Image (cartoon, rainbow, N blue to C red):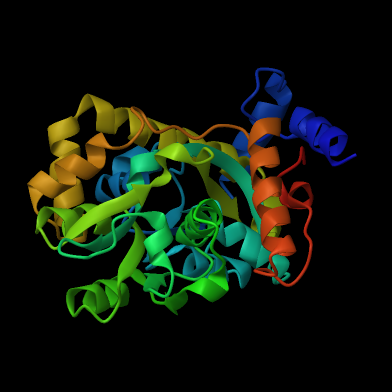
Length: 324
């Protein structure tokens, strides 16, 4: 039943990108767009397209010519979605897991689009001199991660592969910056983390990758929005997707400049910024939510519910943007 529901939903899901929109509808949307006076966009250090848009306002102004843009940085997806749920952010890109925790917590949000997540961009780090050489040796270890982030999902999959449970380890719930400090002090044994934090730790020689997401199920990042905002400004989703995809294409066409922008924006050396940028899909585009993506999200939600990692069963399809 869920398969049929999600398949039907995928067929009707839209953000106005299809060619079937009439000229009259497009004209109406253009007129409505002028009423959007303020747009608040949440982003993380991993959000290269958003950082590019922030650094070069002309890319976004092309699609939001009469809109004041406000940028708000967050340490990770869960914090971004907390802000989005209360309406202080209109759009934000997060990993696969934050929306599931937010939905299970009855937060207000809606899936707008997705992008492919490069599997080497998320991994489990251990100290360079650590005795841990395989997944089974994680038993009894102190592992840092951001609760409710994409790291939460990958660590869950890692534990299952090693025939371990969450009771076999000591999870240390830390935001990336705090986790890095704990890792440097060796008060934790391992750290599940994404880019750019991963490459920074690897390049200074203090860490090595025990495993990454390459051998696990494909993962996605999601553009999320506040449902009331989308209801009031339905054309804004299409406008932002076009702007983000313009930025993604620009990054590919201007690699060196993009690396410089990224390096300066988040305060990392250019050689590390170059590694992070090259790890991304080229270009990293936003796409309409489809059946396979919905199914992947639902499988994670069902696994989390069965393992009591979230407080209730959820239907992901109920939170996907539908044709207004």
